[in-house]
Structures are given as structure tokens and as C-alpha cells.
Length: 254
Image (cartoon, rainbow, N blue to C red; front, side, top):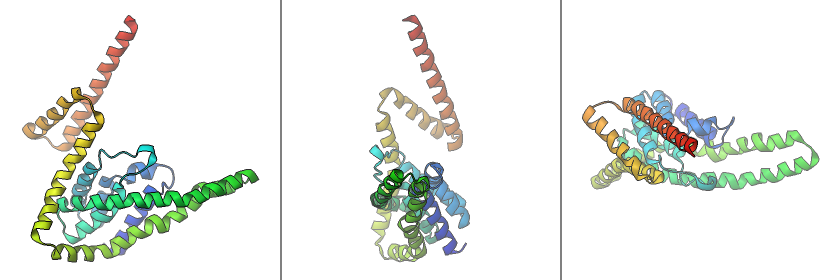
């Protein structure tokens, strides 16, 4: 697939996601590194490799939240920039995962810049509201921010995908072996960090046995991740329903 087509596709996905074009669908669905990995992999003829890298990046960012709407890191920027370059350059999945972390941190600056610039449209919308101009309010809320997002969101991802592969290949060839090995080791550890953040966010000791249960089921039982995920969903439903029944019984006794 042409590099231009891949760069345009990745740029559109990031523009749609972080620009929140056409409601929150892009933010909720397209922002997932797994989705980006699948699309990039299909375009480049390696869908499985795209899913592997995307899944690893998703695990790293799994426990990240945005308190007060302030995005600390941007998994979508990391995915749209790193995954195509990693597939095209033959980079290992673990190295790609390690590189995704600093790229994701840069995304927080892009998002904050977009929010600052968009405050101008808030002022204009207030002026239109005083004039009773509904069309002007609509343009300030949807059209103008979407157009502004093209140079702020689409263009950087497009440029990185156009020139990034050659730069990364030359850089990886120039790095000493111990550095590339260190990146691979770090990339293997980072998904575990994502799991740790989730466990810390849950913060309930009584749920820890479920973590060990999942590990035993996959390691000893030899089942795949999809089957384990379905089993986990079923256990979660059973747990919630039982807890609800207990609470209803306690309420009725009172």
C-alpha cells in the first residue's frame, strides 16, 4: 500500500478521534490502539502484527485516566504514529511499545494547544448568542474547531508517517545493540505496568484473587485470550448480580 495512503488514513483517524468529529464515536472507538493497529495492519498487509503492537500499546495505556478532562498522555497519537512505522521498518513489537510511551506524552501537548486555541471560538459563540445567530453558534461549536484540527491534528501525523519510517530505520541501525535490547526489555515490561495501574485504580484487595484466577486459567488451562475474556465477563456479571441480590436482601430486612 502506498505510503501516502497510509499517512492520510492515520492522519484522518487521529483528526477524527481527538477532534471528536461527528460526536464521541471517534473518541471511543477509533482512539483504541487495537483499532488503529488493525487498520494499519490491513493497509500494510500485516493485520496480525498490527493487532499485536496495538494490543501491547493498549495495555500500556490501560490504566491511564484524564482527571478533569486533562489528558496526561495520548494513546491515539502513539498508535497512529508508531504502529505504521514499526510495521514498515520491521521493528519488533516490544520496541514499538517502548517508543509509543514518549510519543504519547507529546500528544498531551497537542491536545492542550488545541484546547487553548479553541477558546477563541467560545468567545465568538458568546457574541453570536447575544446576536441570536444560531448558525454562528453551530459553526463555532462544530465547523471551525474541525477545520482548525486539520493543521493541529491531521498534519503532524501525516508528516510523521511520510518521513518517519526512513528516519526510524536509520536511527535503529545507528543505535548500539544494548540500547535496542533495552528498548525491547522495556517494551515487554510496560504492559505489566498498565495492569498494575488498573489494579491500583480498583484498589480492592478482595478482587485480587480474580487476577490470579485469570493467570492460572490462561497459563494452566492453555486457553486463548478471547475465551479468557468471555469467561471474565461472565464472572463479572455473576459477581455483580450476586452483590445486587445481597444488597436487596439487606434493604428488605431493614
